[in-house]
Length: 111
Image 1 (cartoon, rainbow, N blue to C red):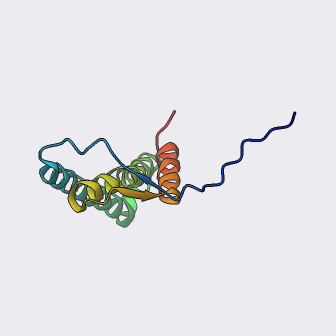
Image 2 (cartoon, one colour):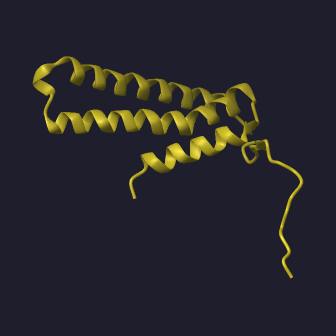
């Protein structure tokens, strides 16, 4: 009795639901976009300052620089989908994009 579970369909994209009931989607999307921009600006400034000053090439500052890189990776993987959903109305996400974002979040969050 060797039966296998074989599905003839391949999943190519997911439809994001659950945020349809929000009354002010554009305001929330704009707030997330502004927050995302400020996080990118602050973390990039942090990285540039530490990389440009030779006196800051110590383990503590390199650790802070690594945290800034992780912050950029995490916010990019988490908030860009929300911004596209709330501001542009894009409700579909491809299978490969979804899997890559899940892997980025899993690698950037310490256990």
